[in-house]
Image 1 (cartoon, one colour):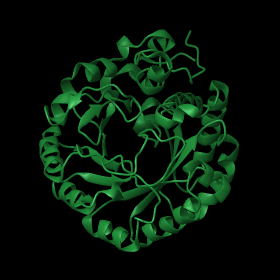
Image 2 (cartoon, one colour):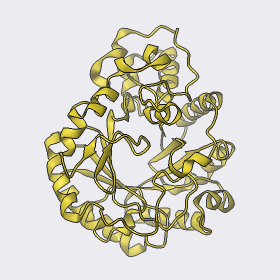
Image 3 (spheres, helix red, strand yellow):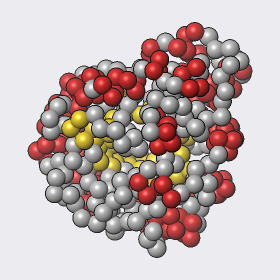
Length: 360
């Protein structure tokens, strides 16, 4: 199917400001997840960004201007930081939105959830990677993690905090996805986010789905999104947008109407374009799955690095993409996973090997 020129417009380039800033508060974590990007450790690193340094980073990030990006505090386990609620409070007072991606451990107490609700956290994401305790706990490395995750999900909603469920997509979790979908029906979630494996960190021992399996999964997710009581999104599988675009346009929708749908509102967002990641020691990357350093917030402001660092400028420019991603008419709304391209080839501008689409 031919693609009209407007889809190549620059409205999908986020060169002024990211939509999401992921801050890895710490790499300390009490879990031993088989896929851990951060290769988490039990104790906190002595060179972690301090509370005052975090506050300074927030202040400098105000220079992004409105609309301000949304912060996602991640890890490791953010609950390893005793200043977690204070950092949430600080960011919210400055006008930023804040979400949290913790590990399901006993550190997430009822009192801690209540304190975060008072601090103004807007959403918390929990991972559910299996429909049964045996499946989930085998991936997380700690017995009892499945049951604790479900209990925490109910407590988070009781405090009025929005809940997102994250699920890892690998060759071993693929067949379990329909059962996971059924399991999360009664959790009152706002979003189900499916993370397609990038083989970095401990995740190098796991097996990715094939391009053909990924394509079928994208179609299944699009069908599911029409009846699911919550939003469905993919992470590190931007070609889901191509599938959605072609099917919606075949159904008679115009490009503006497609762009206003939940999947359309994510058009263009990918590693380094709408996304930026700050490590526990202040290193800045296009995403947590793409270990190419642009600089450090201790030396240059996050705004300056995101807007002007050569790595970010190059990775946002779809005219620099190589192979079939460079020829693809959907490169502005998709652009491929730059993290997966790098993991497979060592070049973040190469084609995403998970996408089976062959542009003419």
